[in-house]
Length: 254
Ligand SMILES: Nc1ncnc2c1ncn2[C@@H]1O[C@H](COP(=O)(O)OP(=O)(O)OP(=O)(O)O)[C@@H](O)[C@H]1O
Image (cartoon, rainbow, N blue to C red; front, side, top):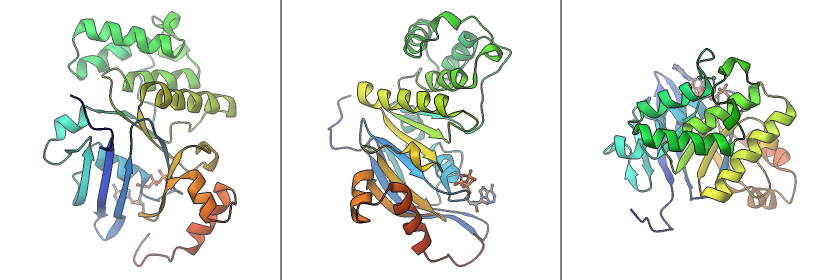
C-alpha cells in the first residue's frame, strides 16, 4: 500500500508508563520519518528499554499513543507490529544452531512462506557478507558477526522500522563502527527508519536525529545539528551534559 511521504514511520505521542509508584516514562513524544537514523540517547534508567517494550507491545501503553505508518498500536497491534523489526539488548541467537537455522526459525515465527524465507535469508546474509557462513554454528562467529546476523534476522519480514536496544554492548571499537555503518547504510539504501537506543554519545552521527531521554522525559528531539546549534555549537556530548544537568530531578523514586 502506498503511504504518503509525510506520514512518519513511527509516532509516539504523550506516552507515559508507571511501574507501581515509579514513573518510568512521562509524556514521551517524538516521530521518525522513513530513512532516518534516530539515536535514543539516555543514561542508565532513562526509560529506553521501557519505551521499546511499549513499542513492541510487551507492555500495554497506559497513557498516550503509538502509531506505525499511521496504524494505531493499541487498535491494530498485529498490523503495526508486522512493520517492526527488533534487535534486543541481550543476544537471542541460539549458538548451537547454524546461522541459517536461526534465520529460518525466525522467518517461520513471522509466518513467512518457505520460498520467501529462502529468498530473504539469502539476500540478508549476502548483504552482511556472511552468505558463506550460513551453515556454520552461530557459536563460531565473532561478536560483531553475531550482531549482524541478529540485524539480518530482524529484517527478514522486510519491516519499515528497526528498533535496536543498545546493540553494540560488548563489541570493540572496530566492530561497533561496522555495525553502525551497516545500520546507517540500511537507512540510506532501503529507506528504513531506525530507533537506536544507546548511552554512548558518539553513536549519534552528525546527520542523524536524536531523542534525549532523561528520567523518563524527552529533553530534546530533532536533528543532531539543531541540538548542537541551540547549544551554541558545542559537541553533542556537551549539549547532552548541559540538558541533563539542567533537568530538575523528578519527585518520587527515580
Ligand atoms: N519491570 C520493572 N519493574 C519496576 N521498575 C522497572 C521495571 N523495568 C524498569 N523499571 C524502572 O524504570 C526506569 C526505567 O528503566 P529502563 O530499563 O527502561 O531504563 P533504560 O534507559 O533502558 O536503562 P539501561 O540503560 O540501564 O538499560 C528505571 O528506574 C527502572 O528501575
